[in-house]
Image (tube, rainbow, N blue to C red; front, top):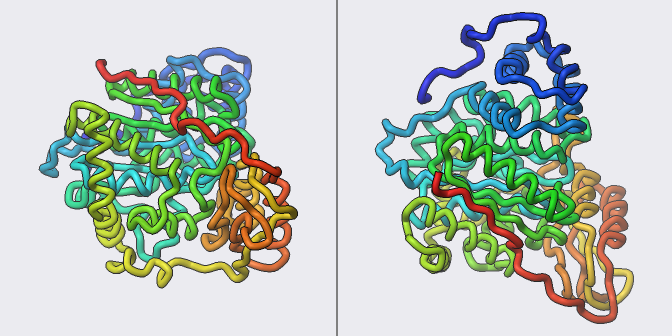
Amino acid sequence: MCSDDRSYDQPSDISVSESMIPQSIIRKKRDGEEITRDEIRSFIKGTIAGSVSEGQIGAFIMAVYLNGMSMFELVEMALAMRDSGCVLDWSPYGLDDRRLVDKHSSGGVGDEKITLLITPLAAACGIFVPNISARGLDYCAGEVDMLDAIPGYQTKPDADLFRTVVRDVGGAIIGPTSDLAPADRKLYYLRDVTATVESVALISSSIMSKKLAVSPRGLVICVGRGSGSYMPTINHARELATAMSLTAAGAGVPSVMLLTDLDTVLGNSVGHAVGVVETVEFLTNRYRDPRVLELVLTIVAEMAVLAGVVEEHVSGWALAVARLNDGSAADRFGRMISALGGPNDFMKNPGKYLPTATVVRAVMPERSGYITSMDAGSIGHGLVELGGGRTKPEDDIDLSVGYSALKGLNDEVGPDRPLAVLHARDEVSWKRTAERLRRAIKVGDAPVAPPGPIVLERMARIDL
């Protein structure tokens, strides 16, 4: 099942002492001191064994949020969370593990669909993509919640099925399981409800623990900045990208970090079932948002170079375009859904299977004109308001609600050109969120300067 048994349910060589008591570790972090490798591993072990309470986990992550972590602590935290479960061994599965390259994003409004597009397209290009994603966090929808909208799809398969699907289809997207980075699940959900989501150390250790648990040979990670992301400025995004890049290097994994512009919603949908619809429309060439297309092709080109499929990015871009346009990527997505328990004919008729909201109606603007700006974060919070996001870790969410046909920067709106179609569970939440949307989108008399490239910066650590 795994490369070795690293489960923290097994006996530990960490001796129990006063310094290993949870509150002692919390106190050190609270007071800005650096904690040791053994202290980090002891605390993470306790989160799995149940000897560390949710209150203590919450206190610890708040201390990390307030005081940060040194690079040493950050790497050790990611590795401890990785080692809280299995680290996958691919050698029995007969695939070229040099082509195992994963992708991730630090999160953003509308960004959650990118992994669902990247995985099948990269697989169609000859790359193996073992992707562990996440559920929605704060005001951003989650890839795993999107896949939960597809009946039968297993987001928690056992490690053998996961690796079999990666080998046979070329890629698989799942969530954290009891085998893979289980410590992350506890910390992840508590971050969501303790106002610590934006912590660079916590984001980095969460992402990297899941990424490193699947033993990739390369990583491409997008870090967004802007109103629709957790990183408000390019400097914040650069700080997070640097942390993850150094963590990957510390684990011996080459990486490329792409800093992206998420000042507006990415694509034309926000939500789970509606995001799956946009994914299918993109793969089948019914609708492709230009900025989504630019980002997808850029990421796959980077992955192709890391995997050794091509030597240059221009060749990777051309290969991705070809596999997107010849239907190969759509075929891989359908095969992945079927292999993980979803409907065999999902790609032909997704509407037959996806949940639908009770109230689905267009939101009209207060005036005619052109969209000059938008508060993507507020639009994301509208998803939570609709019932599509969590305020407590154990919350069930409504996978049918969200926004579709959302207009973008410089699009014309008016009496016959709505801002978006809003999917809500009832009239009250529809009206409340419609008003939020009107406040979040500014309409002017004339278009503004078009946005620049979606990728703002590239940071690579390849020759380790």
